[in-house]
Amino acid sequence: MSKSYDPIPWSKLIPLGLQHVFAMFGATILVPVLTGLDPRTALFTSAVGTLLFLIITKGMVPAYLGSSFAFIVPIQIATASYGVNGALFGCFVAGLVYVAISAIIKSVGIGFVEKYFPPIVVGPVIMTIGLGLASVASDMSNVNITVAMVTLGVTILVSYYGKGLFKIIPILMGITGGYLFSLALHFTGRAELFNFADLKAASWMPAFPDYLMLLFTEPSATVLNPSNWALGAVLIVAPVAAVTVIEHLGDILTISRTTGRDFLTEPGLHRTILGDGLATSMAALFGGPPNTTYGENVGVLAITKVFNPIVVKVAAVFVLVFSVIPKVGAAIGTIPAPVMGGVVVLLFGMIASVGIRTLVEKRVDLSDTRNLVIASTIIILGISGLKFAGLQGMGLGAIVGLLLNVLLPEKTPHKDSHELPALKYKEAPRYDD
Image (cartoon, rainbow, N blue to C red; front, top):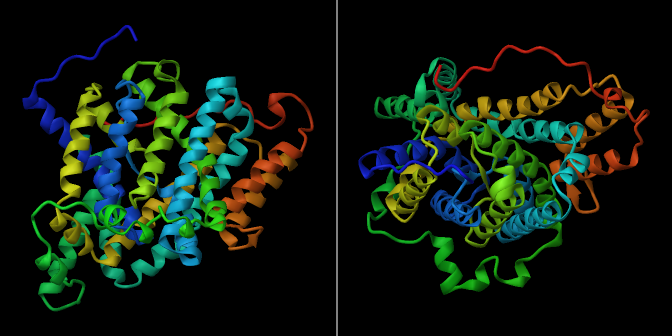
């Protein structure tokens, strides 16, 4: 690239890096809590994955990688059937799917993605991510509906009325508000929501996450043991990569527009997808959930107007330090279930809404029989729990959707046979409004 980034003094670099930490923290710890993985491991793999991504993309793309919500349900299903290591193996293979798609894009160009992963497939699959998690939100919220509703209220208020940095950390603020309210109920004797025994016992002395240590002390108890590899888990988890690749493309386009640089050309989409894929496979080997580029951190870029990737590197170092302090993981473990439940009521609904928005923005015509068949089939297969040939849930819906898109012919070759005329929308609100 012809344009270089402006240098940043350390006096500004540290607070700028911490802003990125605040932006990613809430969502990154939420995924392991919902999937039964270790939050400290998720933080560790998020930090290492981000640094790996920056290396592969030549230090050009200011993107932070955190835990991916798209994999929550597949990990839950795979864990129930094949254990944690089976699910992690599925996540490892999902990263290899990224690597394969990266190689194809480098060979034939971005048209491959546009042809085989169109909005009529991607939109409904994203919808099933949120809809499939509805029962998780209700189960967690029902533990104490008052706490859940207070948490939800704080999250909504911050999301809607927040300014500047607060506007992009509604999850973190919602968890904080719900946690404080829960503490008030707990210490006034109105609800028993906490057990601080593990927090008191946890050490401040640095130590690697438990699963990471097992890789060296007892590898047979980890995903490194071939007996823990399960094809069934791969069929459940790996197909999700077909959807998250599209999300990745959208994030890179957004970062490009925000920074004024064409990252699809240099370092190239194949490199950004490769970085994301290797970060995901690495995370699985270390016991963490798959990684993905975070929109929250793109919001930080838009607010600060500081695009130098060194800021993201500093954020990753901060997160890496937090991840090796046992007391941090124990503190995360004290967050009451209804606090998480209140946050995810909004979050999972918003994920489903992103799928709807994908169809609307791409002007997909659902009065067209072909489009209606594809969307309807994906949604029901994705949330019904139906099993076929080792596939189920969103993985089954995604695979069937991709096949229908290839096998069902277009009625006419013209673009407007499946897209509506251009619609006019109000300008989207800026992050710094």
